[in-house]
Length: 140
Image (cartoon, rainbow, N blue to C red; front, side):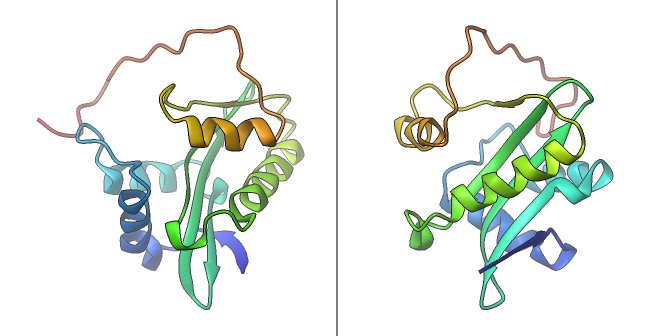
């Protein structure tokens, strides 16, 4: 397995991966999310591949105050092999090199499996409420 930055030919495989991992939502267009990421800090959009097949992804960012991770996905056929842990370690290393002091991750409160994954990586719940406001509608 290798971890590398996203390349344009990965686009459809990444979208399929996110769908297979139930990360897509009707109000978010994954194709637009990829394009937006490629316009800003594309070096923090990582892909794991095995035998030239996309098996995992992680999309990170750093705004000068906090880092964030979205779309961490590992193909169901490759889960529980440490790939997600390796991707997160690579993201953390890259963010540290940028001077990022803290990484925030948003996980749906009902996603017990993913919450347990992050707890095993020493992430803990912060005493905060995540608020959001849609500025650009992806779909009508």
